[in-house]
Each structure stands twice: as C-alpha cells, then as structure tokens.
Length: 298
Image (cartoon, rainbow, N blue to C red; front, top):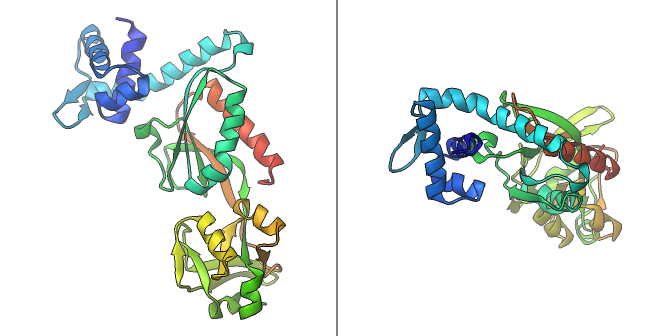
C-alpha cells in the first residue's frame, strides 16, 4: 500500500465521519477507501478509527494522527507543486464555502475566472448562509462576511461590505421620503432576516451611530429578494451594495438617507488555524484580494 494513499483516506474519513463521504471526496470507491485505512492501521500496528454501524469515530491514536497529518499532506502537495512546471497551473480540488447571495452575485464569477487560469483545477463551491464546519466539511477556504469568534480559524481581510437604504421611486412618491433614520419607523421596511439584528438598522450620522427599530410586512432571508421586493414598491430595504449596482444605475431604486452611512462590515477569507496553506489556496486568496479591491470592496 502507498502510505500517502492511506493517510489521505484516513484524513478524509476522519474529517467527514464516514467512508462513503470520504470516498466521494477522494473520487474512490467506498471499498477501496476502507481498504486503504485498514492497511494503514496494519502498517502502524494500531487502530485509528472506531467503526460503528452509523458513524466512524477516532481512537486516541487517530486523534493524534489527525492533528498532524493534514498539515503534512498540505506541505507535501505544496512541495510537489513547487517543482512542477508552473505553466501547467494548479491541479486537484479546491472546496470553497460562501454565503448564498454573495456567492451567487460575486464568488461564482470570481472562481470561474480563477479556474480559467488553471485548467486542471476542480472547484467545489458550497453556498450556505450558515457558517460551514471547515474541518468537518473539508473546506479549504471560506468567504465570510463579518468576523465570527472562532479560535480555530485564521482570517485574511479581503475588503469591506457596505449597505444602503433604498426604495423604488414609486414607493417614495406614494409614502414620502424619510429625512432622518427615525422616520423609518413610520414606513414599511423589508426585513432581511439574515442580518445579525434584522429589526434594528444601524446608521452612522453626523452625531454618531443611530439604531432604528424597523417593522414591515415583508421578511426574507435573502438580500437579492429584499432588493427585488423594494423594486416592486413594497417598502424600504437595507441591502448590501453588491446587490444594488444594476438597480441603482437603471433608476429602479434610489438611495435615501444619504447623509447616513451603514457601518462597514469586514469581508474575510477564513481557513483553519495551524495548517500550512497549499499554494493553490494562497493563490486564490491573493487573486480574490486583488479582484475585490478593483471591484469596489476596499
């Protein structure tokens, strides 16, 4: 048995919790993945996994190996890639996590352009508004809006995201234009429940931050849908700028309360603490950083 095959099969199984999921990640059969792990255990003379009918767990020896093996495999991949002809580009698979709306509006295009530079690279993009378990899901890199308090992750700031208060001209013609943040309390507001405090909008003004309690008959957990509802004249929305560009340029939406700005929210690339980042992950981070600076996320 190839020791590397055994280590890769073990790490994938330990991180996903099953031989089936590990086999899918590695592109192998379930039987071959299990065989590789069993052969590794035989070579090492110790059991690494506790197998039950429902899941696979780690023995103490397995926990110790899992703490070291991913970094070792990353370093090996990095070393082999470094001596490969650079013109061939990167290969293998990159597993990326991103929030749904940001992923649809921006990340999918970013990754498409990055992968075009590396024809042998496979991109596995997972869109979810919940924070992914990087270790458990085998995620190489996650785009995160905001700064979660997770000690096991490292962050590279890529830029910032700002929001704007917007409405359709037809809504403002019918209901009037708010002049101060507190005027929002008398309006129908479209509430994006994905926000940390969806019913309290925070705006920075000349005299400092103002927190406004809002209400409305329309609630949705997607910024693009909140924007679309605003374009239909259903109320005033508080949306990230990256979903508003076309609507503002065409005049279907206009900004209100322009003297007040939403606080900037950091946009980060997140990866696991303690890992040696593979060259392809480092390259994607730099590509995303430069691209977002050009794209107005600075």
